[in-house]
Image (cartoon, rainbow, N blue to C red; front, side):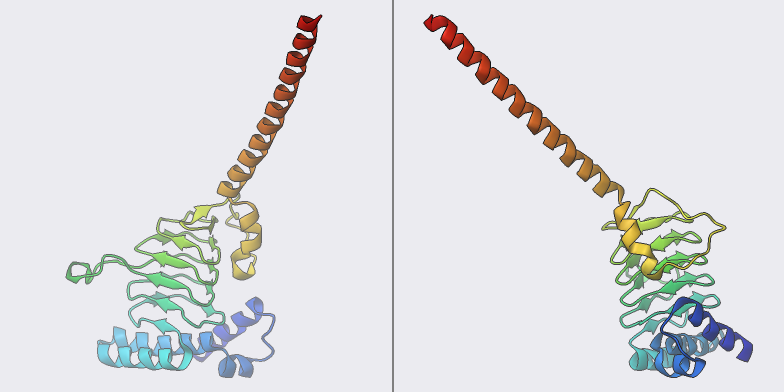
Length: 236
């Protein structure tokens, strides 16, 4: 258990340049504290102590502002950066080496008695990065190495290595190869926005319209010149 805790703390150094010491991470990082509370509440939940698990989960939320249901399944080296406003639902599954930022929701859909016991929340693969404010809704699957841009709303499955941006989220042109496991803070949103296929299409349409307007202006000028020449010829 101690080795696992040290491993999770050390993983923060690789992803946060602001981290200076293990003690600072333990005392001052609400995302790390929330994960520790989750580990305890999840252990209680799996032992059948549901109320105790929910209570410790609630205490973690009270202290950190991060809500992780004790029934969620979370892998190794999970890092929540900043963290305030993060919500992770009961049937969520999160793989290893996943990073998420503040205001992220892994939420469910179809509330009601018929939804109890069924898979309602996102299933996140390994080495996934989810940018600030992103909303992932329903029992969707997010493949390994995927990147979810800030404020994206994801309601459909995400392929491995894909980068998703926009509302609703759309995949950008290029995918991250499986062997590439570099860390992109905030899911590399700046680069992703530059590759947004919808924006590329809109910009191309604007260029085409500008070209058509220019051509129409040239034709109108040529037509006026011809009309002027015709009037002069008739006057003669």
